[in-house]
Amino acid sequence: MALIDLEHVSFGYTASPVVEDVSMTVEAGEYVGLIGPNGSGKSTLLRLLLGLHDPDAGTAELFGHPADAFAERERVGYVAQDVTENTKRMPITVAEVVLMGRFPHVGFGRIDAADRRLAREALETVGIEHLAERRITRLSGGQRQRAYIARALAGEADLLVLDEPTVGVDAESVEAFFELLEGLNDDGMTVLLVEHDIGAVLEHADRVVCLNREVYFDGPPAAFADSDALARAYGTNVRRDGSVTSA
Image (cartoon, rainbow, N blue to C red; front, side):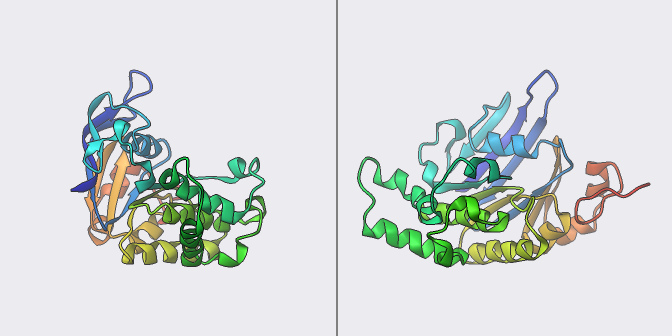
């Protein structure tokens, strides 16, 4: 069963479609990199597959259920592009953020020793157990993203969805971040990564989906590098880091 299944999905905020006739599946264990120019519909596509928007046409399913009616939200770990503004209003510790991943499992019950153990193990997995008692507002961008991945791991998510998580993160931390994702995927986590850095996607992901309203390519990174999909989707000269060169 596909964890994500989009069939001929179209959606627009006005009469013009932002996403048009997109079909895409993500199977368990895959590491998929989604790329495309600014305004190409990448974040909108994420909202559709997460059930936050209803398609104007086509169907979107999560774990075999309509995405907008999917109830087991703890199975999906979502890391947004920039958590900085949200965390400015959250004067809580890293350990407390990660424990939030256990809330869907305990319901109205209390967090117990087993929940705390899972949270501690998640912090160890992402390499920030030494920051457990630090306020989340005092972490660097890369450390904050690790904390939110740890929250997903503590919640025992099966699917990790990340929307340009390296924006504002220093270069050294970015490389370590991608190594973390690769390790999680090697351990069985399914990863869907929206990323502006094309080179990083080609290096780390097992599959590339190139979007600009419609899908221009869906396949292995090596085949994408040999294709003309990048030029057709971006319509300009683009470096592997996603920046645009002059003509």
